[in-house]
Length: 161
Image 1 (cartoon, rainbow, N blue to C red):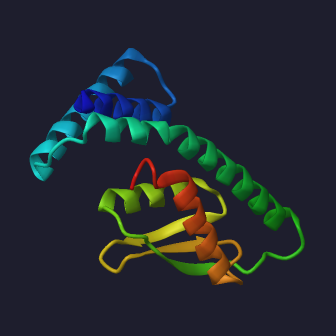
Image 2 (cartoon, rainbow, N blue to C red):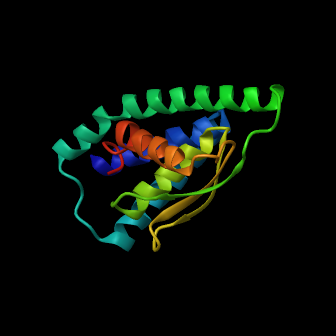
Image 3 (cartoon, helix red, strand yellow):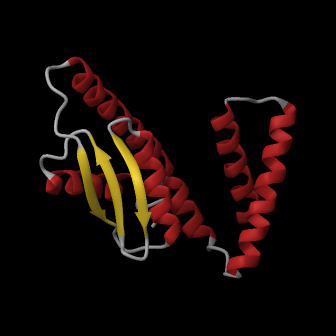
């Protein structure tokens, strides 16, 4: 059941990225997702998650999606203010420590942060435990780090621990 769910989620993500529901795109998404899920199982060789853990993660998806939407709106507003307002802000690079977890969690976090227009993920370095971000306002790196960690804890940690 978990493999089927993964195939469906990956296919849905693929179709959302394409913004298409054409039958050929659906078929391509299903084939690609199936190959990825099968390859993951062979590479990892790990036990599937228990049903309770899968349900718990799925229960966190609304907060992940809604919270990401809130982050997207805030980031869009900040970008618009920076572009229209006086001055260009204090753009720069900030190293954000990655909380413990699996590699997939750090990558998912990087993808989610990359959706927001006032941040660009420059690098996700799991070995060093950091994510390098370019932000529009890097005048207070500690505030950027705190905001990113708060967003991770509130929005993503339940789905991608």
